[in-house]
Length: 410
View 1 (tube, rainbow, N blue to C red):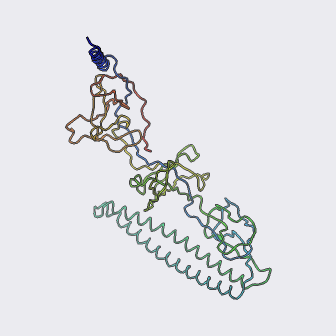
View 2: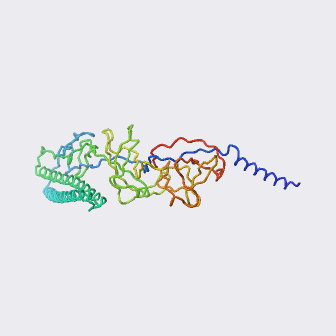
View 3: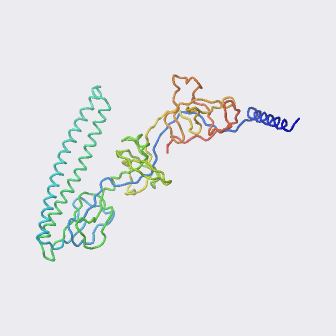
């Protein structure tokens, strides 16, 4: 025989030996897991930071010599508490006229804030009455539950708007008082004139003292920043394609904040406009700010602290699941290999919600997809199927440890 013939015979023989090894003996070693029913969560995970919900930056109402502030960061202050003292510089007739005009403008803003607050209170009361009227109508089937929930949400939003406008009215009133005192100080040209007092517009804690030393400041210079440290919220920027799955009211778990147990909260708001951000790899991303409340924030958690937010977008208590590592696509369809009688058998899979570790297995269309039988509870599926695995290949299995429950997506 020629050398070419010998090469052909060797190739045929090697192929035959490979096929005999694949379809006989111990087979390909694979790792398997079981299709099972279990609780499942799907979340959007991103880093966030805490911030004070209602924050006020108190600025110098007049130009003059600022005394060294008597409040320190972390101090508790009440509404109307003195946070700074400023000795106004002597004013001329022109400056006095300007101060009077500024006082008139501040009084106008105060009246406007009061009018807006009264209108908001009336609107909130109307929304509350509408929500109360809808509750019994839902039970009688005259109003849909969705419409009733919208009424409840509108009433809650109107109530929060009242609180915001009440704070704005308080700030406007404090501004009027400051202008009055500035005008009174301008009329007194004596060197020993009383200092201009700067008041806190709302109760809270001192977050930052922006001017720690005595010096001459101009009107409008920020002096102290206060806020309610117990009213913390978390802001999280998420990818826009993930943001479309998030709804106000979705539960949120806050982890990696420094404590042993996760904190809990809920999404309050998604900002309507996205912004552009570049990832660490230089990839341009469109991201959206998500604002969430914290229900059980400890006193040790302050403003601008880092947390890891896990926003729950879907959950189920009894879900038929398959590990995502067992799935692959063939011809545009999801499929998996099931171990039957020591051999790999290809199966079609219809999946629903997916997380990092698990995927929801949906029933086949009409109970039969017309090509391959679907997955069922208790099936052993092959994890990370390699190119050696094909329909009918003999396999040797080893069970993988169960995936953690519930499953969390990244």
